[in-house]
Length: 428
Image (cartoon, rainbow, N blue to C red):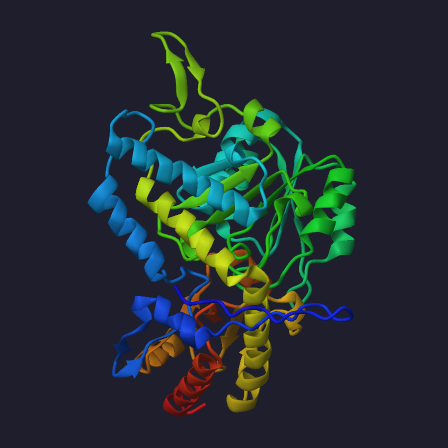
């Protein structure tokens, strides 16, 4: 793995400076980036959809299948014991990434979507009744919207939504009004996957708790990009996907407070989530295994543990600094180099993650993305699983560039040059 530069020694009067990430050097840790696409170097700007994987994660997957492939928890032979140690050790690594004191509060899932569904089905079915209020936002990913729609329809509950301003910031004044309805649950994204908006999660959690609500946070776009401390945030549930955090697909996490998890019924029934099974009744296993029925994706969770270590070694504060710089650079360069481009979301890099959605007037986002691919530039085009947000902004679709530790200013320059070609080809 790339060696992290030592931090300079601080004097008595100044705080230690953070050495910036060397993204160009970090790229060497990601084998997939060492290729050409259509005769151009690969410029991968779709990390919000899924991140690329460092060699350390790829090697961990290979090592598990080559050396330790066995089921976890159930074998008393060497392979099973090694697999179990790797699987449970990964839980400890993720707990450190989130500043969780008790690794048993880390529940393995396939992704943030499954994590949120787990809460909706297990906690929601038990605690949400007719007329209860659930507060969401207009910027939610479908994964933090559809499960609550299904629950509200089943229980005859009410959904209310915090609106956004035209530049993509939540209306906190309206949130205060909605809290007067005494919601049972408030669920919102930490960082918008479409606009990049970084929401004030600690403040929103505190106010929701004062109103008597529990809080669920979708951290899929936060954990891979900035420091996340669930104790400081104070939320009740926090979910994220491993594949967006340099980990394998099929890996995900739900963190929740122990007392909530112990009171919640199982999400799925089957092997490993039970203590005793009789013909007419069963007793459940302890957490976290009560929520992990059946054979899990062992390799994926081991890989996620390695990814968590990689992120911690980089330094999440440094990664946040890096992406803040990239966002500021993109918001400056794109309007200057691509006249007429439409940009969406907050224009202040301090409250924006590494996501830049855009449109070229007169060009459909899908067409723009296809032309960019000719020059090796990979961006996402569509509604990004935020159709209500696009409706709010009166947009059918957007193109989206998104960053990670391996993104450089040169990548943004390549995007700008590609977009100038888009304008030239379409005569706009």
